[in-house]
Length: 204
Image (cartoon, rainbow, N blue to C red; front, side, top):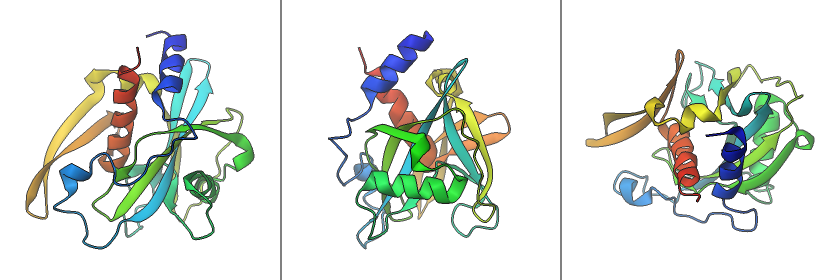
C-alpha cells in the first residue's frame, strides 16, 4: 500500500467529528457476562498520528511499572472523563497533555473509532488526531515510562497480528496482540488498533 493510499484509507476509515460513538462499545456483546454490574465510566484515549518522512506512525506510551492499574503495559494517552470535560475530545486532549506533555495546540482531531468497553469498567472513546511532528513529548514519570511511535504500516500488515487465549473470571477470551520489537501491545490498546485496521480495510 502506497503512502498516499494509506493516508486516504486512514482519513476515510474514521467516524467524522460530528458522529461520536455512543455506548455500548462495539465489543459489548462479547463481554456482557464479565463486565462490572455498575454502569461503565466514560473514558477517552488519543490515537495520535504523527506524519514522518516514511509515512504515518502511531504514538504510544509505556506505563510505569508501579501503577496499580495496567502497570508496564502499552497504551494510548488517555483516561477517565472528568465532570468539567465537555466531550471525549476534551478528555483525550487533557490526558495527553498531563501524561506526555503534548498540548492541544499541537493536536488536530479528525475523527473517532468505535467505542470500546473494558473489563476494568470503562466505555472508551478513541479520538483520532494528527500530532505535529516537530513536538517533543515530555512524559510525566509518575505515569509514563516511555513514549514511542510505531509505523501505521506495521499494524496494517496481517503478519504482525496475533491472538492469544486467556482466562478471565472463569471464561476463556481471545486477546489481540501486536509484538513490536521487545514491546507487546495487547488488550484494549491492541483491540482499538485492530478496530482501526478493520475500518481501513473496509474502505473502497
